[in-house]
Every structure is written in C-alpha cells, then in structure tokens.
Length: 419
Image (cartoon, one colour):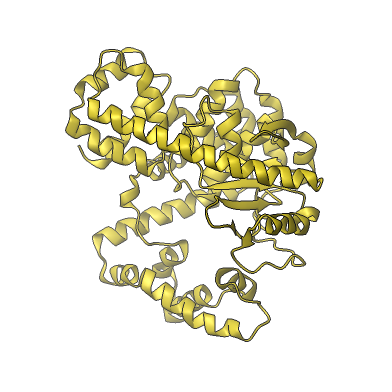
C-alpha cells in the first residue's frame, strides 16, 4: 500500500459519518503489512491518538492485529503521561499569572485537551499557547522569568511587532515550550480581527485546575480555521482539521451560525472559513448547514479552488520538500536582476527579524555578521532545491507546481468578495 492510499484509508477510518458497515469492510481488508503505512501516515498527520480512540469502537470483531492494537495503546499511554506533566506545568504558570491579576485566554491544544476531547490522552501538544492583553506582555514575561523561563530570542516590547503575534518561544529545561500571544493573527495580515471584541466574548473556563478564560465557541472555530487553512497553508497536517470535527461533534447544537458568519465577515475571513468548512465536510464527514456557505459567499467559487485545496491537504508529508514561496517565485522572475533581487531580499531581511532569529540586539553592529550566517544556512537548506530547479528535476518541478498552487490559494483567500 502506497502512502497516498494509506492516508486515504486513515481518513476513511476516522470519518464519523461513514456507514457502520464501511469501517468493518475496510478493517477486514487490511493485512498486518497494510497497517504499517497507515500507522506511519497517522504519526505524520498527528492522528495516532484519534485512530486509537476510533478503533476502540470499530473493532468489534477483532479485525485489528494484536500488534497494531498494542502499538496504538502504547502511544495513548505515552500521550497521557506527557499531558499530565504538561498540565502540571500549565497549572503553575496559570496560577502565577492569576496571582498577578493578568487575564489569560488559553488557546489551541491546551484548551482542547481538557475542554473538548473526552480524554486527556487523545490530544498531544508541543507548547502551551496562552494569550494576554498586549499591555500585559511585559508583566507576563516577568512572571515567566520568576518561574525560571527565558525568552528564546530578542524581543523589543516597545516595537509595534505587527509581523508577529506572540513573544518568542519561552523555554525552561524539563518543561514544555510556552508561547504568550497578544493576538490570534499577525496585525499585518489582510484581515480585521478585533481583539477587544474577542476579549469581550471570552468565556470562563477551568484549565489545569485554574480559572481562566477561553475563546467563545464561534471565535474558537474561526481561530482554528484561520490557523489551519491560512496561517499554515494546509501544510501542518490533518490533526487541526479533525480538531474542528471533534468540536463540531460535541457542540454542533450550540453553534450560533449567524453569529459565526457575521464575525467571519467582520474579520474579512469569509473565504478562509468557506474553504475550511468545505474541507471539513469532504475529509471528516462533518455536515455544515448548506445555508452557511451561501451566507459566507453569495457567489460560489470556482470548483477548482476546493479541488486544489484538497490536493494540497491530502499530499502525504514525505512528498513535501525544501521549497518556500520565494523559491517557487524564482523561476518566474523576469531577467537575471529580478532573480538576484529576489535572492537578496531573502538574505537581507529587516534587522528586527534578524534579531529574533539570532538573539542579538538589532542596533548592535554584531547583527551584520549574522547576515553571513543566514546566507550559509539558506545555502545549506535550499541549494539542492535551487539546483533541481535549474536542472529541471521532475520531483523538484512537481514541488514547484504544488507551491504555485498553494500561492494561488493564499491569494484567493486574501481577496475580498466581488474582487
């Protein structure tokens, strides 16, 4: 079984609307050898734990090999142990922030783990995503330092920082990574997210034993949709899409669709949300009310938009290579000077960004030496890809085409209705 077939089988098994007979038919056809690529794809897409949960209800006829069951159960136990550890650290951080009267909205995995998923062993997360008011960033940083954490890169609290949405990752030996946000999306993106409204809508929640706040249901769905489809360009794996499916399954009768649509329009994110919901239906089987699509976009997009997005989404992770939007644009640049200009713009990025990458004060003369470091890193990471483009290597050209498709999708999502 090749990787694409394995990924398709995995999604079929996780699809909650599949008729009761279909999963049994799929399971009865799978040999022990077939399970190897399926488990590999589940690991790459971070869906191993959901697969474990799903097969508990599907395998009524002992159709899953014992070795596969043991592998899935071991992954579940490891995830449970890791999450217990992470929740311990989260509790200490949230309590310390609460004592300083710093309001916190708990985001993404940490919130989903305790408030959405039925068991803490069913959703892992790498870092603790917390959001505070922008005016509280410096105070929150001081609290974290008091707990033994340190910023991993330079950060200027006085700068507008419109191109980022959280402090540099905050680290501590033996503890999970922490990201402290002040926004759910960079301010220089082409959307209009009102953070004051998000704070006004925020709901009370209890996470890691501490009273905190969480995004309200509609804002949660919108945030995860933008994060998955736009910010990560459909490249971060299928787990985020299945997060939305789990939320829908649990709260479908509570979703205020008119409110969600109105907020999406206020954020100017209608196209992002439309595409996310279409992908959600096609891949996970979730049913979104038909009127939602028309209310989001009065004129239905070209069917090619959805098909290209599905193609991007369902590409096995091993198919993706070292190719960035800048590199993808290089062959289309007209003339040698345009190509050189594009390459130089990739190397000589603004000093404030260099300071974050290399942990050096942007006004220090030392920062100029790091441009040479950056050149060497870029050469090491992307020289083979550039050679492949020059030699017209079939695999590299296929990647190049996929990146162009992705750029078209991002451009489409950025456009306003009627454009």
